[in-house]
Length: 178
Image 1: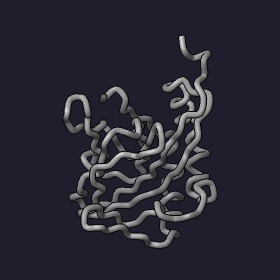
Image 2: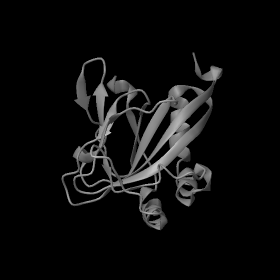
Image 3: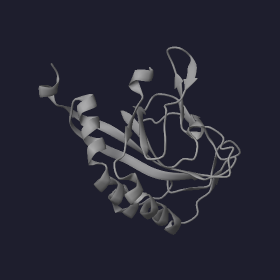
Image 4: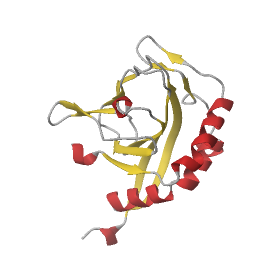
């Protein structure tokens, strides 16, 4: 199971970090608190198309190396990003166990992350154990959408900010399969 969860380090993360954070500040403050999950700000519930969100357009420009790695990793000829959103967590913020239905793959890009212990926790269905990747700010965690995962409770005073997306595979690149 752990081999299905991998990471990519986004080149030039420091060049887009401030831009992304400024764009998030322009969005309505949509706090989500249902007594279980506590997310300080998110645009998950916005009805606008992902492509029309300025932060995603900027991320997309800088993600070419990541997309290339994903294409090679999964032998893809074509994929599409089904949906995406950003989330910010403050102290005591959390997103409990869940998975992402209706997609093949999910990823989390860590824009602000002060401590890797605040990174996504995954549940290894085979060995029945919780694990985390060795993640730092600027990394992207990639995983099959069916793997249960969560954002652990943030215990520090520093904010955690992520972009998460779901990806659907459209076609196999047969030349890559040997």
